[in-house]
Length: 160
Image 1 (cartoon, helix red, strand yellow):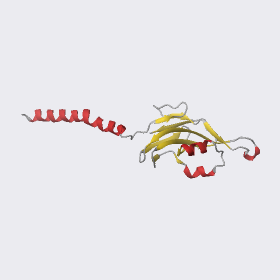
Image 2 (cartoon, helix red, strand yellow):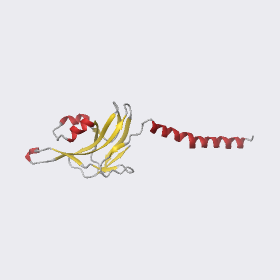
Image 3 (cartoon, helix red, strand yellow):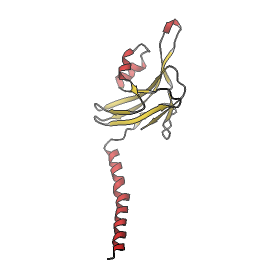
Image 4 (cartoon, one colour):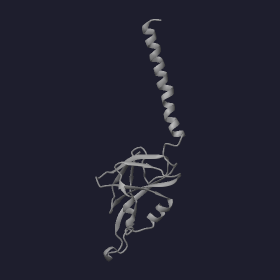
């Protein structure tokens, strides 16, 4: 067999490997639960661009006796995770305003949504959303909450 024929066969074998074997690795990742699938997304969420708006708000009732005042805009994604599963991503605002995130279990989400701006302990759970790396401590349902202080009517972009 000539060297050009051997080179052609090696190239063909390499091409077959790339077409059939390499894609199997990415599908095995999905089979073993490494991909996070959201069961709830913010209203108007665009999965192709990652764009959404923060449509919910917390108010500080009686803030300086001026009535309700928006202290935080937020929205969230709901997902199930297995212990040790990693969520990676990032978010940024369309206007440059800082966006923060926290990941809560179902009970914490309920408490958060039914609190007002005086719930100071939320600050301990919050981190900048520019880079998100989180590992599930136990199997369960979680909420990835995005927020910013004050009123915010702009777009948030989330990449996973």
